Figure (cartoon, rainbow, N blue to C red):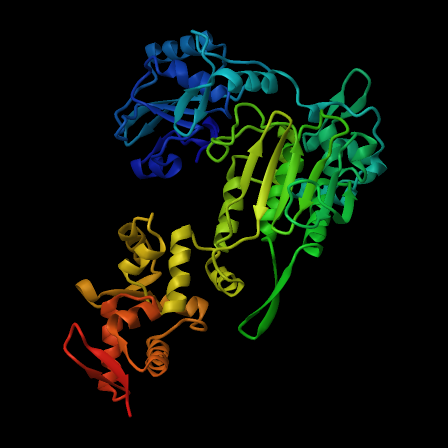
Length: 545
């Protein structure tokens, strides 16, 4: 995706054009047929989000229609931009000989940009949507005022900062290592300090202390994290078993917190192949994401408040000072983004620690779902945001370990549940899936899992069933998967225990469709391992004497 006009070639083929931009509109990309009045919404909405590109000359059904950069086109775009008080840049490009116009809208900070009729818009997905009521007020407060991360430190001592961590951030940004005597210049290069031209001094921001100071509390009251392990599940504070208090560079603090949480939560052991490994009660990836978010997005203007972590028997709660920033709500937190501490986030993004555009929440959810653990719970008030991770899973620890073979695949929660069911039952039928997941569209689930190469169909029509594909068995191994021979053995044991079974009783015992149970029973009869008596409806199966 092109990020600005300089990234866009003057001439392209149609394939090159769609390859560069894609066909889907999003927060930073809008297609317009021409320069109609809707541009008056797109310009301020992009300016109040993250900036972006408007490409004129593309129809709603993604046909390259054309919109040459004529004097009239230039004048209309300029007039619309002036009405919104936004400075834009315009460029003409050619796609297969068809001329298009591209408008680049900058992100505007420090002031509010509205439409000429006074509406405050934000880009959400490919739409320009208005902010109202509390969301409007909170966005204005966060946007026009400087974040507390930009407050200047009262004093700056280079030796108070971790040089190796500053160098790590510099290298991630494609810059050379620095030395202690040039620490201030390095912080300027990282965007967390400013030169004061009047005094020849360097103004180091609170963001630098949060990211790199050995003890940020020397500069920012409350810049630390407190952890407590409590007995039980609440409500109420309950007795505590252990406490800790950490302060330091943000990433160092996160690592220390992970160690404390793992030390005071269960560690399971599992055998995978010939190896024995420890499986933490809570996925470290989800914990790390929640901790980084709490430290990176908290309101450092609330002096004296700390990030608080409470470990209960059934959950971990991570509470961060300050409400959700800007227009963000619990409902739109996965789709939209707004960073209270943009300088901190910019450095962490450069270091590939976070994704600024909301993928962190998605990643937490995906990691929890990969082990069929409950999705994280997010609660927000005007004073704080709390993320809760629960340790209850739909399946056993052994199944959670087995599912880790598919951690890199984009599977739905329902697909993972189906895989575990087949692992135990040997196969699955649509009827059985409807019993397990009555609220799920089973036909869509089976079609999707088959298309992804997870399942293979056996049999036809009413007797069809689905088994794990050879690729899945190759990836995860066959250990623990209930094969038909094991099902037959289980049926024989049930026949011997009861004295005889009907088809319905066999199906209930195995948890499979009656057609599959009948097929297994008939296989036992043909192999001489059981005998059948009676007609089809009343037939029972007995042990062989």
